[in-house]
Length: 409
Image (tube, rainbow, N blue to C red; front, side, top):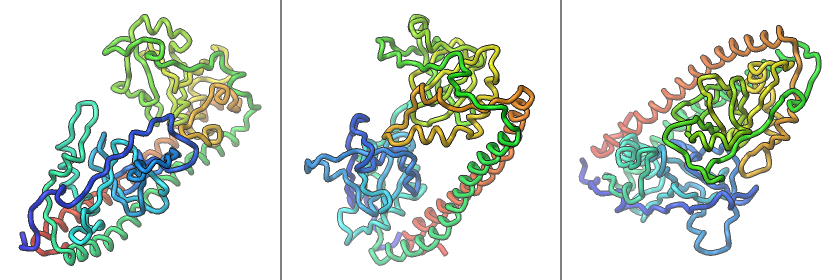
């Protein structure tokens, strides 16, 4: 270690600011964008929904407002993820379990150097190892303050930042290209599926409420005085369904038979179609015999087709998974802080009518195309992983050698 780098603790050089515990009832259609845990990814802010709050004029809220260049860190779940706020994210405000971090004195520690220091694999490993909690990890800002650091001179910091800025700009450009290709693959998938439904020449269209015998949704047991149990009747939520229509059994909750009996309208049967109507709109699954007996909460709609239905449950699921209804679902769910669909909106979806042979042809087509798109995405995601690993390697080598007054080439 060089004489210019003294071994000290992160808390000696930075100040943390924890976020505010905004309630869902505070959410609005416009105002300050609420930076939550899921927005903080490693190295970037992901704007994955529209969640805003109005900030009272009270001066105590000023410290939660974010500025361009502010560094934020996740404190719950995937702890230790670091990102920077940009102008495009503003105006924005910190939510609970996300903190901002800034140098006590920029004459000693530059914000740019701090950002890269916190992006190192060593800091992420430290945060994960310091995390507490069984169901999900939590770390406090006081824990982070104990991270040991070596802070070189400002001149050395500037040299390191310039080198990393140059390297990361090139790598991030590649990463953005990969991200766009993944997005384009999803859009192409939906376009091809729509073309296929048109080529099959539907005999007509009917609303889902004209076809289904039941369109309903579940209830949260605790709202009726019941409690979840450690075992018993399966109780499904949106997170119990993955994006490909499969059930995630370790995300099932449970209720007892008394609660299940009281929630008669949402008791599931084999071949029922489930569609998420809150949060991740349009996530679907078809109920299999091994899942039953089961029930659902209010974020899942239950669609039951009669035995003599013009369309099969598998075909209806295929339409949802192909993105056939995506434009309608996005339009229906737009304009709210938390996207939600009503049962009436689900029932209004227009379903193309095909004979059984063409329904099966579309199902087979979707299965084969999904496999090709999945393989393509896997290849692109692997390339993105390599990009991330390269960044980690550069950071690790740079900060390892910087204590010896060396820079990675």
